[in-house]
Length: 241
Image (cartoon, rainbow, N blue to C red; front, side, top):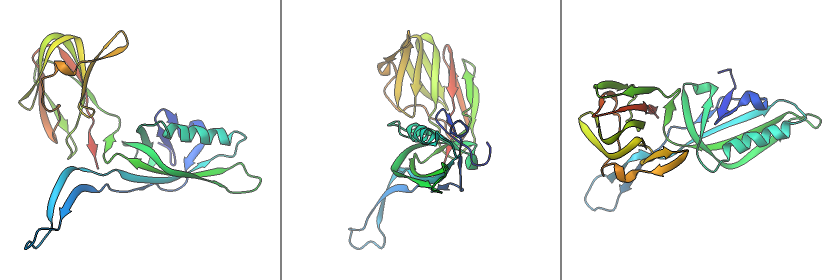
């Protein structure tokens, strides 16, 4: 990526003649835990750890090239952020990762001269705690055992699409995930904890076809994966703080 460039979802900074004017400020997320200081006779607070992190904060200022349509460019920039859900953000300063962000607070628009159409817009974003390796690697698995190596220190919550019919078992590191009554294909998203298939362009809920239990995860380091039947494509979502 060029210095100052960024992408928000499908929007490229070049499309709106914009660049980041200063190095983005990105915090390290806080660990979620509770400290109980009420017990008597104990020399330290009792720690209850949630095994999760708070969102992180990202701040940066975007400069928009002088133009008669600079206002339209600013509107497109804000619209890309304000979708009502997390959107993917890539920054030139950390181009090998994708952040999932929403805009918080007001956007501050600055005009640098009375007769100038140059504008700067400062934004504050709330980002999911993990950033994801870009581009997300994909792989194909079948009935022969395959090894997938997670290069990060964080467990991965993959997206998997299984193609096949009937009863199919997915085995990851010796743990068996059972699917019954598969009709051609079935898809699962471990991050969203959802199972479905697509029929003529319509998403059909298939949660009942996966045996009750945890969703698949890929631990840091090597992971052995195989199917009892059919094939599968898997999108690895390697992530780190």
